[in-house]
Image (cartoon, rainbow, N blue to C red; front, side, top):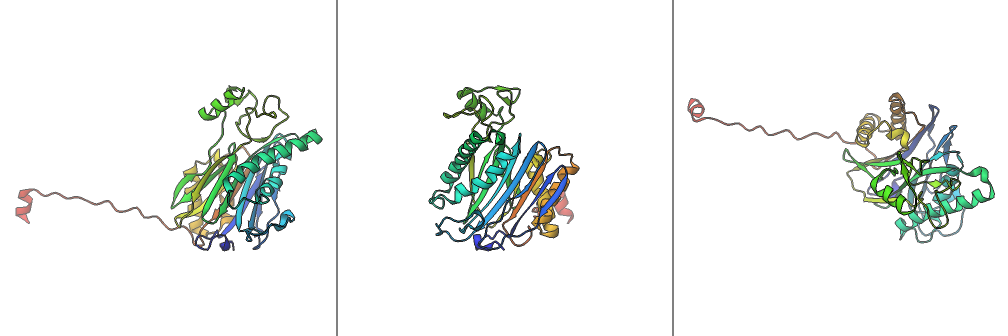
Length: 327
């Protein structure tokens, strides 16, 4: 279905499952070629998760078009985890992809464009909140993009992307906690503080979109709460099998390797990313995940993952002189 992304390493399909208050809402709509799907959302009372994805196949198109008909040779998927209210996640889900694909240089400078898109989204949301204070809220975000053989992942806070490379989990993002040494140094250099794991004693995150309404977090010159994403890239090979994207509700109860092992086993059984996403959500609920959940599974191969057979250990035998004489 998505093979035109890269003929050598086709993304066989993309599916996602959302839960809010333990309600499963599978997204079974498959985006047709040359089109962009509309965002699929789910809401909760205090935390809101969103995911959206788009597939495009004309890298030279430059005519401004509606968000639902972009045409580029490009694939992207995002997960947003809102806090406070849903508005920041809503806003980012719609505007972040726009800022990426509407940049004329995004094919040549994808990393710079993606980083800039996060900051543009944050600034645009600030302007929206200035016009309507009821929108004030925040969101964590992760964007995973495939351009040819190149995988680019950008994130703020603790949504996570994990690549399965022949059964091995490779984390393509890093959680941004205030008590992380690197984040703590950055926060303190910008006039903030970390108290009991919380930024300025208020937020358990070091990076986020929005939250301009919280005093001391952001201002025109910067501030300790950053919207600048951390980027990681990888060149995909035939040994890269799939990518798992999930919000913190998944990673609260799954280690990265554990999630890859679980997903790999399920894909070997049914080779269905839809079911695999649902399986991960179901298992997270069984493990008593207390947050709402968003899981996206992207397969890079049309066939199920191969069984990995560990090489048999070589057995070394020794013989005594007496034993040899008895032979």
